Amino acid sequence: MTARPKLAVWKFASCDGCQLSLLDCEDELLAVAGAVEIANFPEASSAIVEGPYDLSLVEGSITTPHDAERILAVRKQSKFLVTIGACATAGGIQALRNFADVKDFVAAVYASPQYIDTLATSTPISAHIPVDYELHGCPINKAQLVEVISAFLAGRKPAVPAHSVCIECKQRGSVCVMVQGTPCLGPVTHAGCGAICPAYRRGCYGCYGPMETPNMPALARGWRELGADGRDIRRALRSFNAWAEPFRKESAAHDD
Image (cartoon, rainbow, N blue to C red):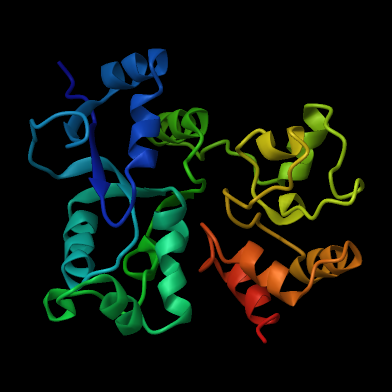
């Protein structure tokens, strides 16, 4: 009998939402569980099978010296490693620390800051080790996750769309909210959410991070034409994917 590929799921600085996306797969999860051996997934089971692992899914960013060492060990025992979610691919909401002095935050939050051992930055996994694939989202799209797992099991490239949220708006027949006067990050944001917010006449918040070729200056000009100022643009770009390079560079261009 041929051994099934070993799947491991790892958590770093994050909220666990992307791991839960795998558990939310319901019927699809049964097919995944039948195709792989879920060898290391503390969110789902306390049983742990030792590596090496054929595929590792990594959630969360690197924020402590301990995690900076631990991710090296994860990479060493993983044949393929895929990062999932905004924290793992772009540093997450916690990367807002990167724009200020983390010591000030620690002093404001903790009564005894001398006991806190943290890094000055929150960085994506790819800043520390080679990554085989990045799946964006906050949280990730469960259908895209199943596709990525299936692709690696089959030895092919994942078929995850590279276009912007604008295409998803057109696919569901939603009228462009920017045409109606609402600032929106959809033109520069990676597809995957199904354009939920624009469907309810709200601007996209950029949950899935920058698309492959975002025209950030053009978006900023469009926002200004709608009445947004530099502070509005900077705050919109500094959220879940603040440390993703296109968002980071454009937000810095609007610093006071």
